[in-house]
Image (cartoon, rainbow, N blue to C red):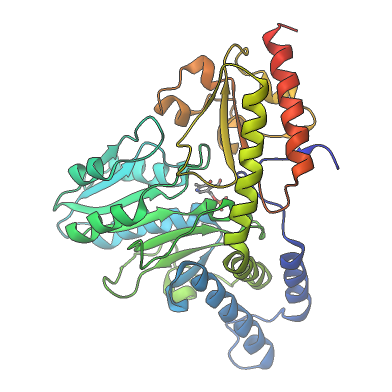
Length: 386
Ligand SMILES: Cc1ncc(COP(=O)(O)O)c(C=O)c1O
């Protein structure tokens, strides 16, 4: 077993070797520009892109024409939120609805819109277990609602929102429903028809694919979603995302989606088992610890735990043989206490004595057992004041 052990799969995942092989092969063999319609190099690159588009679409029950490749989930989120608002501004509906658990990639563009006079933002708070109650959401949605945007799987506490119930509410109210599904690789099962989704953001590097690639699903029928582009240029991606396509990254992302569709269900069972083993191990050996986020409706790979009696801000640094984090990668870069834990009602001291574990496809039982031993020892040490 190599150390440090990687348990930060919500920040990013290692590339699956099978995905890396596709990336390498494509970069070497298919360097053509898919927009070069006059020769074989362009045709070959275009075939690679369209095959990947089928794989991405297949993962979420969409059709290939509904997939727009982007640089990642941040861009997909911005295109969904700002693109929809841009297309519908001044056409009647002016309310945007979201939760208090959103990633900055959604909260940011929504906050920007809320600062414009054309829009009104309603934030529905999640309950203490990190779930948005469909009744609360239904109470917030009105005939004025253009968009409901929810984080499908929360990146710190792993909670899985009741998408199908919310989708039903949106459809009945004539509002569009966007979900941020960046954490799909950690064990989220999603279907655009079953869950009545209109816009879905995906990220390659959270599902064993490369960084800098992702996609936005844009529903084409029942209802058709209109978006205004964020950039203007050469007309690629149905005019919604111009620029020469990153063919190797797209091919690899497609392969990552294909593998996730094939293996996701089995992955979820295995990874969920390891996660439960880790949680049991911590509970057996440490008093005064608490699980943050709903115990059942959560990503298979996620564990978020607060450790009472541990001095704030010390845990991550004490765990030199583990790659874990205190919250989101963005928050930890800025040294902030998790706003998500505070939103759930966790006190600031306890929130600052919390760990987020992100297990994944390559996590082993030995690693999980090692992690438990390390965490138990560190917590005991810190509690003892040494
Ligand atoms: C829920 C969520 N949304 C969006 C993002 C941003 O994704 P990307 O890194 O692909 O831009 C992340 C990852 O940081 C995330 O966890």
